[in-house]
Length: 411
Ligand SMILES: Cc1ncc(COP(=O)(O)O)c(C=O)c1O
Image (cartoon, rainbow, N blue to C red; front, side):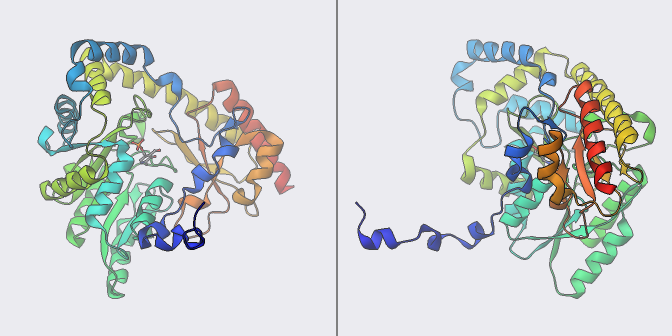
């Protein structure tokens, strides 16, 4: 039995200031509601499991265990398994990033990349500019550093550079330290939006001039399925290499469960990020790296990507057509040219957060309300939907039921 004194000690009294700032992701908190298998989910921000090349990955696992068990089952360098770093770096060089295997750090998903970079760059109180709306997982990471996200607006072509410049000037005149812009330039989560070339050029130029780092999160850049819109997926890192940290991921294209992402960035920053990773987990899974490397060596990844694009294009078209047909007049949805998400705006008077629980109970269809994605402004009328997870039939049925629900709310 613990003594009275021991029983009286509250472990919370010993928590660090950082730990007190940790917040759960508002989306993960909705998990029981939105991951119920009897619910049609437009909410889950996950790739469709049918797209995982399970057969090829299974063969790659067998090859790795047969051919290099001693290496693959061992610890590796903190930066990760060299042959995979070489492949990742070669693909990035082809996209215009001046990098090499030595300048590539394999991370446990791009989420870890963001956490490591945040630890290298951010002190409590530092300002990070973010798009409105932006990825909830990034806001969780920034909160863990006690950094302050401040919103920047968008135009139809990308981040509104004039607004960004004015915001930095205002914040600096208030004595605040603006360290970085966090952006998802390609087929953003949650809005599905992308950027045109001119807007990307201007953004990189402005960030260089303002001396702020660019944290470029790009898990969706390879999922461009509609070439016609003039969207430019070339990395900001190719334009502003001295101040951009590029975060990539295999989560949306091969397997989210493998948890393999990567970082490229200026050398000094990469060295610190590697030390931060060493302190955190020594290295990611050598076995997983070796399996991915073997898969990439034996299979036609480009053909796999082309198949994925067709898969998601078809689902996007089905869902958007059904949303347009069934949602109340005055509703608008973004029409993404890639990625997994569309961002909806509903007519005045609808509060997506307040309605979610009743909506799921009545319609058995789930969405994510807009509020957690937005650091400023009113997101009550907004919602994120994904076309990634459900079958075409369920996309149509889900849109029909959701649309009827919101139409009844308006009546
Ligand atoms: C914009 C964005 N960044 C990062 C992540 C995390 O990706 P990973 O699985 O590579 O950690 C996600 C996942 O949904 C995302 O949407």
